[in-house]
Length: 176
Image (tube, rainbow, N blue to C red; front, side):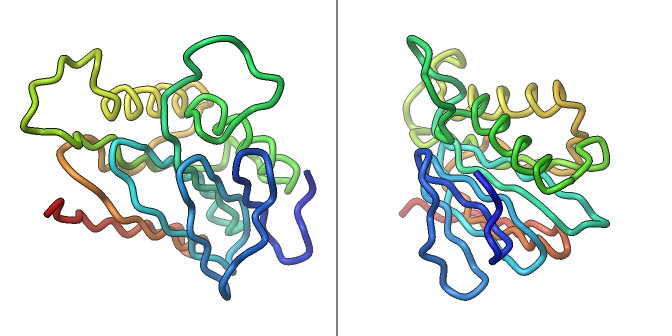
């Protein structure tokens, strides 16, 4: 898919999302964004994770809202933004189409919250922990240095990514 004249690409389950309000984009689960300095991107995470990739000089960035670390069964014909491993490939492809040198980018990762802290969950069954660990491992595999993270703990996080500055604001939201 090509970057449109408005300077962004945002996808939901393989479809371009065109409903933006001003220069602010809201990502729902399974969506991702790739665009330039004109945009701020926000989302709300629970056990989901968000990977942010940013190029300081070009002021281009990408942000995801992944639901699961990887697809559980079978292989898909198309990559899907719902999965950590697949959305990272989608974001990298879009950044490369924009001429963004990946080796000059930095990464940030957020989320992976424990949404049921009152229940004793084994680590291998903790979806949030699996998501966060998968995101960190894949970012490292792609050679993207993780310069900031806010992972695990309990509850929700609200994120705002300012593509111009590269800053990501995180607010922990009370579950009550």
